[in-house]
View 1 (cartoon, one colour):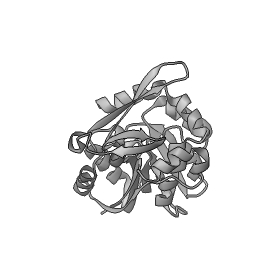
View 2: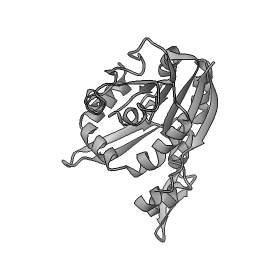
View 3: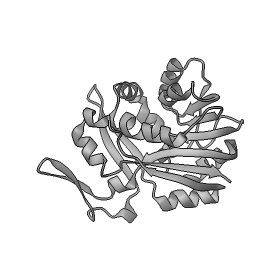
Length: 247
């Protein structure tokens, strides 16, 4: 287990229940932007065997299990796995590392929702994902969009604007965002900022080809939930969705 994986376990030790509760209330960013974009990229999954890489509290598994032939999942956080198993009691969900996937079988699709960016080095997880994919199998993953981080957000006359040129894009590597729990505890949620060059080079090195990409935008229903955020993130993409195919 590497340092990033240990940090992820520690981070979600105090966040799992609260994170899951937030998702059930329909998070603007997850349910209104990231999840619809991922579902669209997955496409028709009828008859497909799927692996959820870093399944978290199992919300994707719950949503997809009736639409595909079979779905399994794993996560490195025991706290997340506990919740995932509770809401998906009939599904094979294991504790395990993304750098050593706890499955030997092959899948048609592996997908990772906002999880791969907890690892600085993508080489090992890409190798492992290649191993468990069938020939021509597909790997789909979402991550924070570097565009939304390359600059500083300023509010002018009640509207948010992205001011570029304040941060050095080439030196940007990681974000640590403070999250205050209900008990008042401050937890820093970290993730690495994956630049397109890194993703493409790592994919090619490990036997993948990039076949699709999407800068995720909020769905129309998001406007009712938060009109201000809807307007802003309809112009500035907060998530990136990648689709790779095993060569």
